[in-house]
Image 1: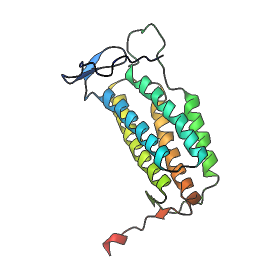
Image 2 (image 1 turned 60 degrees about the vertical axis):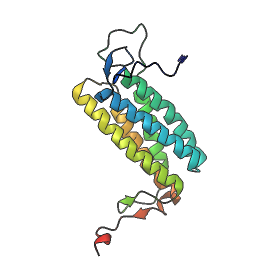
Image 3 (image 1 turned 180 degrees about the vertical axis):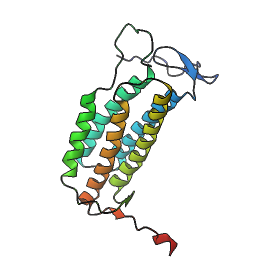
Image 4 (image 1 turned 45 degrees about the horizontal axis):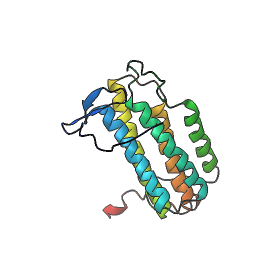
Length: 191
């Protein structure tokens, strides 16, 4: 259980922060950037649920995903190389990735075929999901950079990759199941 008795600690005033294992690192550390991006993604999804008038199925899934994203952050905040913590650190599990794949497949059954790249937009719901998708892609980049510097064997990166795919498919689903997608017209602005 998490217990927060005080929100400010002043321990970050010199440009450092603590990882979940107590190690102090600069606030610009690649690991901090990785799970900070995940926190941003979670907030963007909260806005999508609050303002997007999402279908109940999609908003319910996003609430599950928001909880998963806290799991992702918990996984990322404790390096795999950290000494034993006296408890088993929370790690992302393959069934969480598998669930996203099932949801992608379920929505994709209803979608019109995709014959062009699409522009982010359409309905408010689709627009907000596209925004979340782009933030998720940036999170993937951050975790990929972390993986170049340190070991990460849990399926965090596959989870984020599937999530960005799900957000794309869900945006299309919220755009009249793809019928209201805005298609890219190559070179249209050059004329």
